[in-house]
Image 1 (cartoon, rainbow, N blue to C red):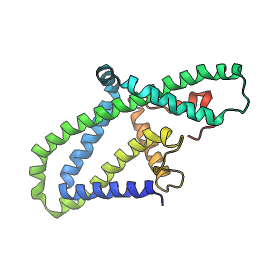
Image 2 (cartoon, rainbow, N blue to C red):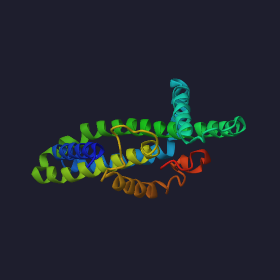
Image 3 (cartoon, one colour):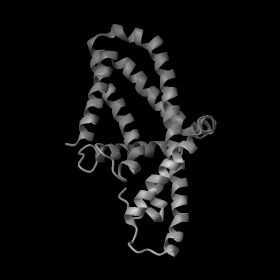
Length: 221
């Protein structure tokens, strides 16, 4: 079991405990709220990103860092004694890869921020309206809430891990090492199931950009 697995189990436990405290009715409402937030975020994250990207200059902040990361990856795969002509051939491909992955990173940021904003609004409504009514239903309500708390946490973890998988599988992830993880493959399977649901609304949603980049062929994804 890796450090990654321990972190996932801790988050899952916290989600289950929170669900137990809030109860079944609130748990169902929060799960439905998360699903609604995911659907709306998938449908409108591009418009949301178009609004926030110029305000915070996100591309200017992210693109140089991605370019530096890719330069290190390519440097590690370079053939010793490569000629200037070969290097000149690689540079346009590196520029293209930087743009593609920057767009992917911005897409993730737009999706996550919109999902968080929507979740906060929905949770405020649930806290004010639904939770006071649900607290009167007793232990059965709390026991069911534990299961729903764990389930909703798994959904969020699958989404986060799945979207971050191209970055987790490339370069040196440090303590977030998924190579020896027992849970990482299962979270990716869950992510694929979620994508099959999301594909109903957007068939090309969050396609792994590394698969179409020849310069990164051989990079483990």
